[in-house]
Length: 210
Figure 1 (cartoon, rainbow, N blue to C red):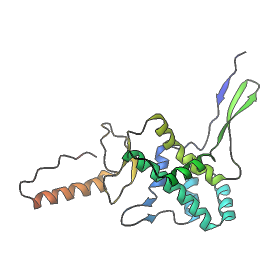
Figure 2 (figure 1 turned 90 degrees about the vertical axis):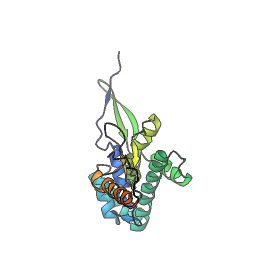
Figure 3 (figure 1 turned 30 degrees about the vertical axis):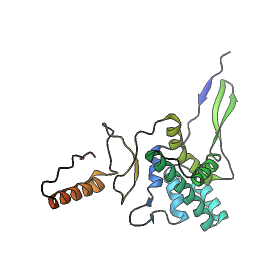
Figure 4 (figure 1 turned 120 degrees about the horizontal axis):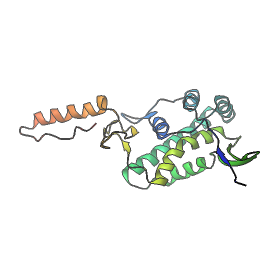
C-alpha cells in the first residue's frame, strides 16, 4: 500500500519581502525613527502580514506588559536586521543577534504528521504559549532558508547610507543598488551631478543602475 502525503495549506507563510518590510519599519536615516512605536502598531503589522492572530498577540502583550513585549519585538527585529546586513556585507553577525534568532526559531511551528483514511496529512503544530515568538520565527524563516540554500545573491542594502533600507533585487540584470530610484537613486544622481560641476573636467560617474 502506498502512503499518500498531502501538504496542508498554511495561512501564515512569510516571504523575504515580509522580512524586509519588518526591518524597514525602523528608519535608520538621521537617527532611528520607529514606525511601530507601540504594541498596537506592531501587532497590527504582524496581523496585516498574516504572521499571527491579533487576539493571541494582544493577549500576550497584555500579559507581558507593553514595555516587555515591545522590547522582545524590537529585539527580534534588530536581530533580523543584523542577519540581513551581515549576509549582504559578507561578515559574521554578532553573537547576541544569533542567540536571539535561534531562540525565536525554536518557537516556530513544527511539522506534524496525522493519519487519515487516505494515508498521511502533513500539518503544523503551534506553540500555544508564545504567539509572538511564533510570528517572529515565521518572518525570520525566509531569510534563514535563503542562507541555507545559498540564495542570497539578490539581497541588498540601499546604497544611500542615509537610508539603508533592505530589499531583494528583482531586476533582470541583478544590479539594482537603490531601494527606490525615484528617491534614493535620484538623490545620488543629483549629488554626482553637482560634484562633477564643482570639479572641471571631472569624469562622468557611469553608475546609473536602478
